Image (tube, rainbow, N blue to C red; front, top):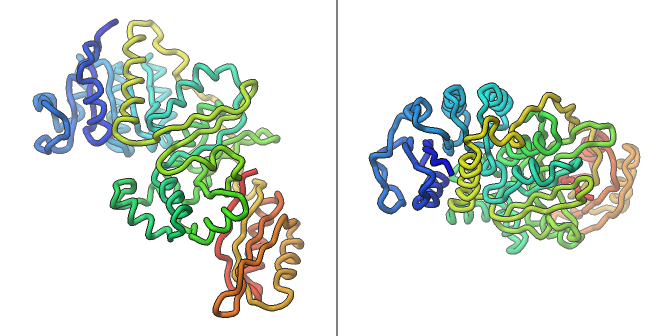
Length: 422
């Protein structure tokens, strides 16, 4: 096989893993590594410090480098660096989900113009192979739906909330101490990380360009220990789900938000920091990909796999044609208000006769049928905790019903509204 030279931009958790994995590879030579601080102590045995540079442009402009590996994250300077590298006819391997979600179309078009390939297995689900299988093994399928758990931090938090019956804030603090959550966890817990990933995954799987700015995104910060307990009693687990599917009207429905997942659904069993992607298509049916969604070695596994794929095809006139992206169709994305779902509603109401009837009447006025209504006890202030599961209804109708419920003098507060997976 042809030996290749790579330039590595970033030597954090993932970059360190890549260096370790490639240490004894005779066919892939790390020519240069761009870092912020050359003098920082690295967790790599016998690292040749002569490889380090503080100028990443030294890598993208180096004519001896065949493949640029970008693992710094964010859009800048990554976007400009990769554009320069592509124009210099270098292949790209990246783990940058935000960059792909926001600037992927321009990068892929530029790569096609310069006959180079961009591989990004590590950007979606860490160590889980998903992009290559969709592009190759599942290429003969018409994929209609993806439901995925794409963020280990949120999945860990929800798992511990369920197992220990503790608050979101307490579990978040624990997750930060264990290194499962960042000091600023906003990108994870508010759903942005999952949204970046599903934007790219949906574009590839549904073969239509998905706009990250049109993806409805909610996080897990409003989920309470009570929600976890009630969901469990009703036969569900609460997970942060990244969803993408083609509707009957041929619209593309892409969103990220918590969902009550039935115990009968395999995604309900995915716990802790594990990620999972459930793919539905014809003729394959349902296929599940699950495994470590982050971490030094799992993510490095995907990065190195992409590097080797390029190495094995680098002498071809048209390298890895099946992995190239050329999405001419822009998805007609469904607004969240036009979706249809089942819903879980947690309500605190005055403990007076007829209050459940009032809830039913209000829902009925908005074309919402109730599948179940449970009173979960009386609180100290003589209020009742009521949990409602609806039948399938329109999002716009449920939002109108919630507004009317909030304005009714028998309703103390709406604690939460969570969509239910069917």
